[in-house]
Image (cartoon, rainbow over all chains, first blue to last red; front, side, top):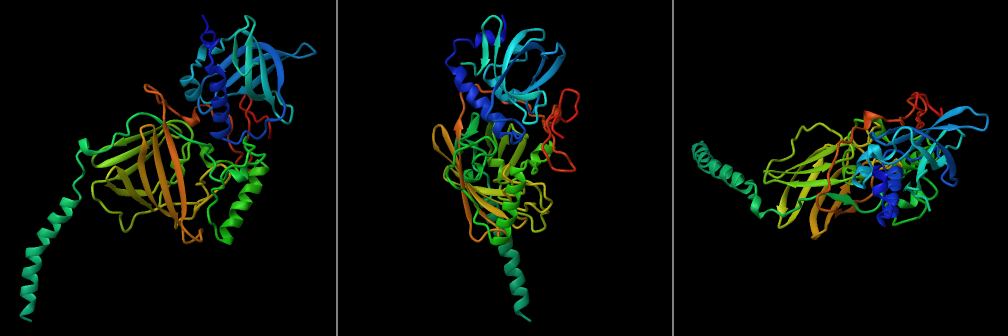
Length: 129
Length: 269
């Protein structure tokens, strides 16, 4: 059973998302560089979940319209804060197919601030309503 | 001339008594008389002192209670210049350098858990973020006359009932351009010092009230109150290790906060 599945149905999900998001915004830097007014959706395959300080990063391989594979970097909260809320390194296992919502970089580079994720079995992580 | 031996004799007689008296007053309070601040705590509210500076910037969009230092004109201008650079993403948070202490009073303005460790001879305020340690000596020692300035300064204090009262001196402030109070670029000078009162105002809330004086930067004392709420029992505190995988370093040439791609190269140079 994947760890994130344990989070399903929990009324705390929305709460921890709010906390995690504020952690990203408040902690290390301003978050400048990401478009706070826009959310985009990508579908791809998890390459790596960098469960490291000061912030976690989800690396996902996405195939673009021309069939080229592009690696996207999604920044999330601190591993400590997320860990206290049930997130684990195994939450995003390498090879898993997943759709991601993110606030993209202003300059169009393949990176953004993580908003939420939905796996093919319907389980979700983060904000996905 | 005759008086001198008398004076010396008096001094010899009295001096040990004075030493004893000083020593007695400096005796740390027994641990079973000290307040219980055990557990893990988190700061209430955001990490920006003056929320009014945040509108449309830095993630927050609402104007809150204005807690702006009473700057004189010179330091207000310095702060405004920082805000202008912040708005252009050209004023990096100094803790992005990974390894620089948050310093005082920013020690009480951080995200992530806090621990207040009360011991008879010292109180330690530990922060996961950083990590940072604030040591407050309560064993009766005084500040050194020749204390050199540091990020966190030197703190000595005493107990007034269940309230810890301490003074903090020998702060670098913005002298070396590497200490800010929050990521808006709020600063104090190397003449800043503070008197702080910490007490538990209810079983789940610790309150820290700092009265900050700074004859170089402020026109009057600046009183800042921060509250810390008890986190659920059993909450763990972890390594912070900012240098582990910092993909948001500051560009040393421009001050711009970078976003690094998986190959370590900036995506927003």
